[in-house]
Length: 254
Image (cartoon, helix red, strand yellow):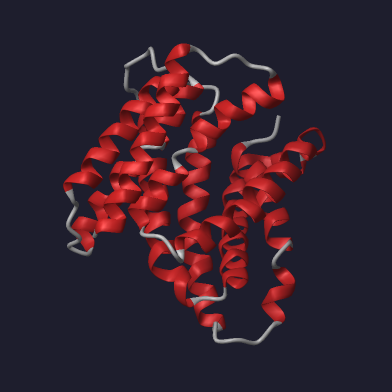
């Protein structure tokens, strides 16, 4: 078993390698901008990912997924406070519909709220800040340099935090396959597409679309693992999809 920040150190190291060559290309993106992204998103994502890892195995996975996905509520709330953005009725309705869908999809049975639930809620708040920052920063930056800065900055902060986990950093042998998968697919490709998409999409819409990861997780379980979803999970996925459609309609009318 490898400790949370040690695992994340390797994950983001692998992810950053994919975009390293683009850092040597001269364009309008300054090194100062890249350093800002490294510091801001590196701190936010290392803590958010670390908190989520800490709770893994301590509380039900569905509960972690639901609480983490509360960033779909936090993003418009934070933007309304910081940037005085108005939240339309359709947006509020779409968020409510998505939350209802998530509730059924995540199959929550335990409603207790303790330390680990609070840790995951802190993670959700940090992910909301990440989405808002990317929404306001990605459009004016070379997307490859943006993704490298995000991944490399998170790698550096995770490495620093991993030093407090002892020698776990080098216990990588048994976690090599998960590290490569998370580094390449969820790291390099995932953050590239997120940054590219958010450079063209409002933050609230992006957060709701990203919350569909629970739906795709269910579909992946069906296709790859032959898992049969419950009636509740199917209803939750359909309700979530409806909520995202409502949000897209709301965005197109604003």
